[in-house]
Length: 316
Ligand code: BDR
Ligand code: CA
Image (cartoon, rainbow, N blue to C red):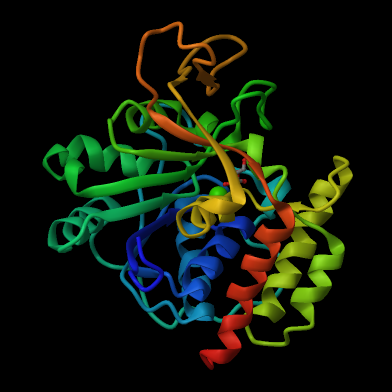
């Protein structure tokens, strides 16, 4: 991919502070042709994440079709994360009210229309439970080959964060994650292995605060809010889980990556929602995911700050 070629992209997520920052990165980088935004139930209910998505899109000047996603996981009961993101799903600084409404069609239909009509293969960045993407793959198998890749935040090869074995996005909808990982579509997996190393530290908040543009003024406050919760757990900064899934597409050089065959545990007393890597190739399966394992944190932060500073230049 040349630096001038824009990647056609669908953003699917459950904003959420780190989802919102991922979308700021996607827009501010100038490296994507963002075709649509679809919302997932996860950090909060689908009503709340859709409202948040519209507010974030309004803030960053992302005027593309936004569609509401599936209201609940494929099989399991819904689960939200107010302890991390607040009751609104995006607590913290006041945001603009939506300048436009969500589409009358749902996320799966919008994904299908966008992917069908794109002249190039479309990437999906998935930063919430993968319900929409899985439902899309089941409903439109004929469009699978039109997906360039699914760059997702989910899982952790070594450990979880919502249970000892499972990360939140996978735990909320393990069946959906299994469909995605088993789909044969190229997968870039940003799991906790890397996202918990992609920390924005308090000194970095200051760099963003000093940019003084309408988006940076919100981003540093999101970071402070997000860090407040993580600090109580001993983190040295705010983990940029979801931005890793965007960064992997435009700055792969800041990451160390390894290919593994990753299976999703959909049941079990202790390990439901675990992402199980075949470290030694004992299953005989070819790898199905390119897994991000480590990050050059300083380079990552520089790229993120570049993207946030672009909003001033763009006059947004
Ligand atoms: C993931 O869970 C959510 O709370 C975040 O937005 C991120 O997508 C991290 O486990
Ligand atoms: Ca998320």
